[in-house]
Image (tube, rainbow, N blue to C red; front, top):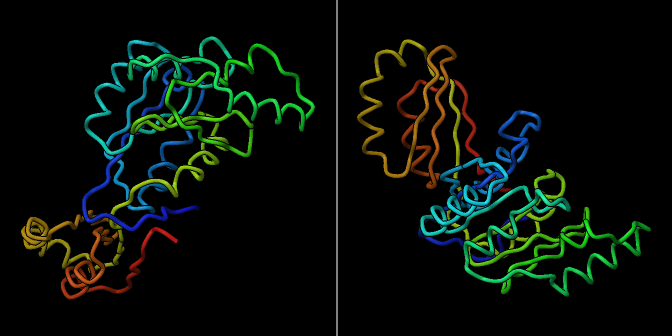
Length: 251
């Protein structure tokens, strides 16, 4: 996994993911991207705050983009940039930004080279994948040749997981990042879990930037935060820890 090269920001860097595709909503296609994107962004210090799933409908896509763009640092989209006439994400993004869309000479050159290398046929369907909103930067991928794009704070990626992952690797070094999330999982004494529940809730309200999730059946506690010293200090002395593992999700 590639992580952002820019220094971490002290301010929160946030994101939303817009999953586009009627097949996702109908259940015919099982989404494999949400969990991957969530884990990936957490690793580079970006908080994924919201996920929406919409069908291949212009109004739904444009409305979602217009609602999400002002609220988050980045909007990632997956799906709807393939070769069929039902793939309308690029057109919807252009409409959201109020810019024209046309064949991008850079994307066309990339696709011509890919066709030449692979022996595939250049046809009208493939040419549709070179249409890009004016002013957008291309997001390359090594899997299929056809690029995604980045305009404003919206990053448009393919829905096919392997292609989406390649595109995410390309944009990651250019993303602003915040302080990376740390996580500590502890095995605690079940009796102490019961008796100290109220105390822990009070402490959670006072623990700046730390969240707790309790699983009494398994006597497990998951604590997350961005300060490793505070995270360790707020858990180990209080929970009768049998084993613990403090780690940063990024590598």
